[in-house]
Amino acid sequence: MHEVTFFNRTKLAWGACCAMNDTFTIRSKVAALIVAHNPDYTTFALVLGSVARQVDRVIIVDNGSDNRSSLEDLCKKLNNCEFIEVGFNSGVAYALKVGARHASIKHHPEWLLLLDDDTVVLNDALNKAL
Image (cartoon, rainbow, N blue to C red; front, side, top):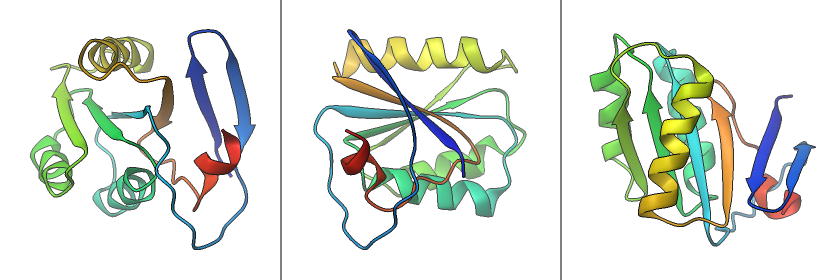
């Protein structure tokens, strides 16, 4: 089980999401930031699919992946996904900063969901956590 981090301007909430069911609710004003660096394609497809149906916007921040074109192609299959490139392996903190700045300027989300490229979000986890 992975820990999922939510960030709001006024509060920081941490929670391990562990419930599973078939309900999928899109949370309003939630942008998910996924930092990617050479992830396994199959795992990343699961990560992307698990979060895309639960948030308004998914922003993949690529940290210089060798397989970035495959990751970008996955993103293009979704109508709520954006792919941005740092251009080199800048580290997770810097990539999250780039993604958060992009999300804040372009989408003005109320919440940011910060994910690694191997974190699968369980069904209805965001609805339960928020």
